[in-house]
Amino acid sequence: MALRQETVTAITPTLHEKYRGEGVPPLATEDFDDVDEFEDAAEEHTVYTMDLSTALEECEVAIRKFFSNDLIGAMNIMKPWCQSSLYHSLGTAIFEFIPAMLTFDHAQINRALAALKICISICNQQRRNYTLVESLGTIIKKTDYSMYTDNEAHAELCYAEALLLQAAMTIMEGEDLTGLIKGTIKVKSCYNSYKDCAKILEKKQWNSEEAKVHFHSGVRLGTATFNVMISLLPPKIISLLEFVGFSGNKTLGLAELEAGSRSAGIRSVLCDLTLLGYHLVICHFIGAPGDLHVCDEILHKELKIYPESVWFLVFKGRQELLRGLFRPAIETYNRAIVSQDTWCQFRHVCYWEIMWVNGLMMEWREAAVYAHKLIEDSSWSRTIYSYTKAAMLLQLGERLTAAERLQCQELLRNASYYKQRIAGKSLPMEKFVIRRCARYQAQGGQLVLPAIELLCLWNMFTILAKNKNGAQNVLKLIESSRDRLEAGPQDWMAGYDADNRALLRYLHGCCFAALELPRLALDTLQSVLQLKNDIKEDTFLLPYTLAEMAMCHYHLGDKERAAQMLHDARKKYSGYALESRLHFRLHSKMQIVKGNGFGKGSSSKTVHS
Image (cartoon, rainbow, N blue to C red; front, side):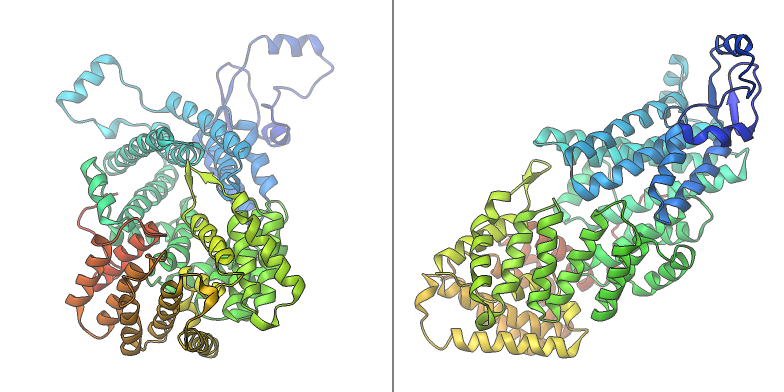
């Protein structure tokens, strides 16, 4: 039966199907002519509940609709039962959570928090409850996880997932340290629930094999994600987390995600998304090699099922970008743009990516067009978009028209007005570009290779190296600019001579390193350190340079020197621009130097599932 009711009145599944979309439980009869009988039935206060098997079936249908871009259809399946069913309330919360994460819109965040609050309340009603005597008993002896019913086990799992989403929302919504603390406490509770779920999976005898398969899928997804994400954090943060009971093992986490991806559970597609996000986005950000072979397999499988899914098209475009296939990447992103029109935020992701692809091809005006689209349509960071558009146009140099120069002046003058705070903090990149806007004014309307600098800071040189012609063109541009700048004093630099020379030498060295010319890179990067006492503002160049030099020594076979330089970059410098970004990269580079790899490496502790 699709429904379970608390009175003796009977109901058929066909009526459930008929009235599901109206947002109300189905009526017990279709004979509306007999009004008196209908009113008598209403007085019984019949309460309908969704059984676990049917809830899981409906979630599978909703997931198929969701990844086929039918977002409204997916939500329509979830909402009628979101006040009483575990999985319908969780599905509703997830569908509210995703646009909140994409937009950072406070109204959408509040809707997501309200949906999560309902979900957690339903989970608490259906989780295993202990009497006072039973609670005291667990102090003396271990909890008997084999006694959980199928429904209680899934309630615990849904509770853990909802807590994790609520923690992310709380941190995002908070404007001060209080929000961060509240979010951290929720993450700790979530972590403990996942550990309980792992013990339930190990001990419990299941009434339904289907319920076990879906439960296993969820436990894998949760514990694996914790393992992978914790293992990415810099050592100082990991030490603090381990002190309060967190731990992570990247090797186990990735293996569990891959096993979850191959399973029949409803969360297998979420395991796929997590793997794609890790290998194609996170690894690139932290400067580690992602496993593109795993991504090939996932994308082949999912695009066969969902050929026009915006989710998997965006990741396919990202994969092509990382391989240096610039034109195919643009074509795939354009397919993703037209594939759906419900959530405009996916278009913004594609605009962002196409902007960088054009930058890598030195198509500066075309890159500026997409930066302008983001300024007009996206609410994420108008400050960063404004500076990026100006940087792309300024890269035109002598080809810049008078009208375009006026645009640049206006963009750079107004960029700081749009500065925002997320989770109570300013975005580090926003602070960086605001300082660059001030430098533009101080230097009489000039900046040194602003678009090339952005490409480097967003870690695009490793992609550029996959396209040899593009890399050679960028190298020539850097060399000609460096020759011109170091030919003699430049009046326009307004006391930033050393900063500008250091920046050009750093970009030059990074380009050599990306092209796998480590000896040339070391010679050039060493010349950056020679300017350390003269640099006025761009002190970030010193630790960033040490990190690049360390990897050059690693590629030349000197692992000990590489490890020492990474240690120095981490310990000897602080308070510089984009510091946290470098610390994530230093951690990944240290793992590579130590021989742990980063797609395959691990730390010493483990969350077991």
